Image 1: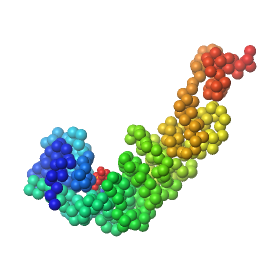
Image 2: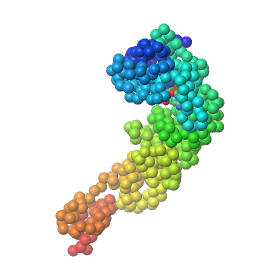
Image 3: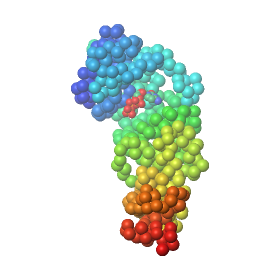
Image 4: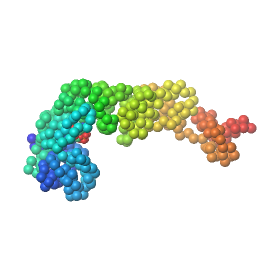
Length: 408
Ligand code: CTP
C-alpha cells in the first residue's frame, strides 16, 4: 500500500514540508527515513497528528543538527540511545535510530542495540503503532506493516505483537487502555486476557513511568471510561490495592489541565484511608502539589461525619479551613452525600470569605497588649461573625469590649 495521499491529506503543510526536509537531509547522510509511531496510526485512521516521530538507520544526531540548522529549529535533546528531539516552530519532532531491544528483567528498561527498521517495529507495543511510512524520495508513502497493523486499524483493534509484551513492559497495560478507550478503538479480546494475566507486572515498573502513563489517561477526552476499564481489569488496584474508580459519579469536568490532573487523582483516591495516602504518593512518586491534593481529598472524607453533625457555621469553617478549595470543590462534585455537599458549598461560597473588620493591628492600636489572647479574640470574633451573632463593625467593637472587659 502507498500512503502518500493520506500523509498529504492529514498532516498540515508545515509538517509535510518539515518531513520532506528531514528525508532529504537523511538521504544526504546516506540513510532512509520513515514516519513511525502514533502519526502513522493517526493519518492512516484519517486523523491529524500532533507530534511527529521519524526514524533513520544511522547518524541520527548529525541529521538532527543539520535539520535544525536548515529549518531554524532547536535540538532540545540528544540521547546516547540514538534519539533526538527537535522543536521547529510550534512543531515537535523526534528523530530516532532504528534499534532492537532485549528485556532482561520485567519492568527494567530494555537493553538497546542498533537494529533494522523491521526490528524496531517488532519491539513496539501494539500492531497499530508498529507501522512505518517511508519518507524517502524514491519510495515516498510506502507502508511497512509486518504485524497486520492496517487491518487492526481498520477494525479499531488494539492488539499486542506477542504474548510477553506486558511482562516486558507493563506500562503497556495503561497504554492499551488509553488507546482502546479512544473513539473508534477497542481492546482485542486476547490482549485483554493478557492484561488480566499480567496485571501484577505493574509492580515491576517505576512509579515515575506509571505516573506518566496514568496522567496521559487523565488528559484524554474519554478519560473516565478509560479509568473505569482500568478499575474493572484491576489495573488501578495492581498499582495500589486502595485505588479505584467509579465512572458513574463523575460529572462533566471543565477546568484547566493542571486542575484536571489533580481532580482525577482525587477521583482514584476517593475511597482511600488516611494510612494509605503515604504508600500511594510514594508508589506514584507524586510531587508535593499532587500529594497535598490527595491528602486533602482523603482528609475531607475523614472530616465528613463531623461536618454532617456541625450545627454552627463556625464549626464548618474550622473543620474545612486549610483544605484546598479545589479539593473541596472536587469532593463536593463527586460525593452523593447531600448534607456534606451543602456544608462544603456554604464554606466555599460564603464562609471562607468572611473576615471581621477588626484586625490584630487595630486591636494593638487600640491599646490591647500583645499576647496569645489576641489570636483567641480574633478567632472568637470570626466565629461570632460566621454564626451571625454579630454583623456590623459596631457590634464587633462591642463584642471585643465585652470579651476583654466583661461588658463595661
Ligand atoms: N512505544 C512503544 N512502547 C511504549 C511507548 C512507546 O512501543 N511503552 C512506541 C509506539 O510505537 C508508539 C511510539 O513509540 O506509537 C510513540 O509513543 P508515544 O509518543 O508515547 O505515543 P503515540 O503513539 O505517539 O501516541 P499519542 O501521542 O497519540 O498518545
